[in-house]
Image 1 (tube, one colour):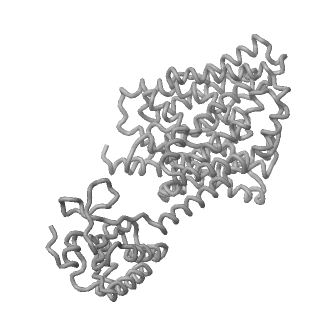
Image 2 (cartoon, one colour):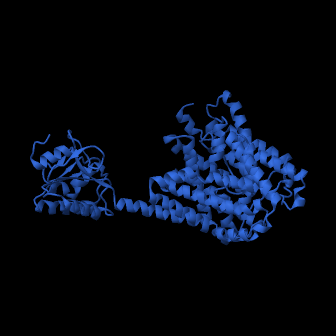
Image 3 (cartoon, helix red, strand yellow):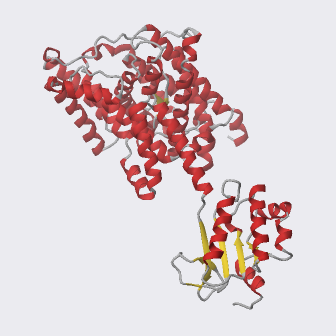
Length: 561
C-alpha cells in the first residue's frame, strides 16, 4: 500500500500490510500481556481509589483505541501507575473516595483528559514533550515511586495506615508498626519474590499473575482471613454500562488543573514510550497519532465508568520482547480480558489485598531509574540537583507541584546557561593552520598580540553584556598588548538587535584603542544580522573572513603559515 494511500486510511494503521506469519507471534505476545496486565491493572485501580474491575475496563478500552487510532505497533495502553495517584489526588479534593460522586468525577476527568490529548494529537503538539528534560522526567517518576511505595506499606504490613501527606503516612506507619500482621507481611514478601525471580529469569514470565494465583490459593488453604489478612472482597462481574458521567459544573471546574496535569504526563510518557519503540522521524510522526489513540481511550474509559489511561513503557517492552509485531497483540489481550471479566471474577473475592500492594511496590521500583540517576549525577551536579528537588517536591507535596517546580527550575537553569554561555579562546594547533581551544588537549601555540574568541551561543539581549564583558576581560588580561581581535562566529546561530548594538560598541572601542577587529566563519543568519545592524560596515571593508587563519593574517598583515 502506498504512503499516500496509508495517509488516507489512518484507522488500524498498524494492521496495514499485515503478514500472516505475524499472527502466531502476536497471539503469544497478547497472552503474555494478559498475564502481566490483569494483576497490574487491578492493582493500579487501587491507586486511583477505584474498584479493581475498573482497571480491567481501562485496559480493554485503552487497547482497543490504540489499536484503532495509534501508529506504534507495540505500544500498550491501559491503567497506569504514573497518573493514577494524580487522578486520585485531584478528585479526592472535590469528593470523598469511594462515593458514587467520586467515581462520576473520575469519569469526567477521563473524558477531559481524552479531549485534551485528542486535540494535542490532531494539532500535532507532541513536540511539547521536548520541553521537559530527562532529569526532570526521571525525578517525577522517582517521586511517584516514593509516593506509591509509602501508600502501599499499610497493605503489605497489615496495618491501618492513615495521614494526608507522605510524611504523615510514614509517621502513622511507624506508630502502628508494633501491630503489623506477620501473615500479611509473609504473603506480600512471597508475591514480591515471585515477581522479582520471574523477571530475573525472563521478563516474559508472568510473575505477578503467578503471585496472584499463589495468594488466592494460600488464602483458601491457610484460611488467611482468620489470621487477620484483609481480602479484596466481592467483585461484581459483567461488562460496564455506557453513559456520559455527570457532575455539577463547579466541581468539574476544580478538575481542570489535575486534568491538564494528567494529560501532560500522558504526553511525556507516551513520547518516551514511542521513542523507545522506534526512532527518528518515525517516532515523532507516530506520537501525534498515538496521542489521538490514547485520548480516545480516555474518553471511552470515562464513558464506561473507568479512569484515565496512559501508555505503559514496561508493558510495551514486554510486547516487543514477546514477539508482538502489531496491535493485534493488544486486541487479543483485550478479548481475553473481556472473557476473564465475564466468567472469572468470582475467585477475586478471596484475593488478599497484600498481594496487590506487593505488585504496586514492584511497579514503583520500575519507576525508580537508578542507573539514570547515577548517570545524571556523573554528568552534571546542577541537573542532578534539579532531579533531587523534583523527587522531593513530588513525594512530599504532590505531582502537580513537582512538575511546576521542576519545569520552572529547568527553564531557569536553561536561561542561566543561555545568559552565561560557554566560550573558548582559540590558539593555533602546532604545525597546522587550524585554530582550536587552547584547553582541547592538543599542543597549541600562541600568536603574540592576537586574541581569537569563540562564543558558543547566539548573541542576544540576555547574554550580550556578558559576552562584551568577556571580550574586554580577555583584552585587559592579555600578557602583552593586543593589536588584533578575531570574533569567531562559528558557534553563533544569530545576533539580535541588542546583541548587534553591544558588539558594535565594543568594536568601535577596540578600534579607537588601535586594535584591528575582524569576524571569521560567520554563516547562516549571522552575515545578514551583521549587515542589517551596520556592524559589518563598522568593522571595515574586508574584515569578514572565511576562516580564523585568514582573519589573523589579514588583521596582522603577516605571512603566517
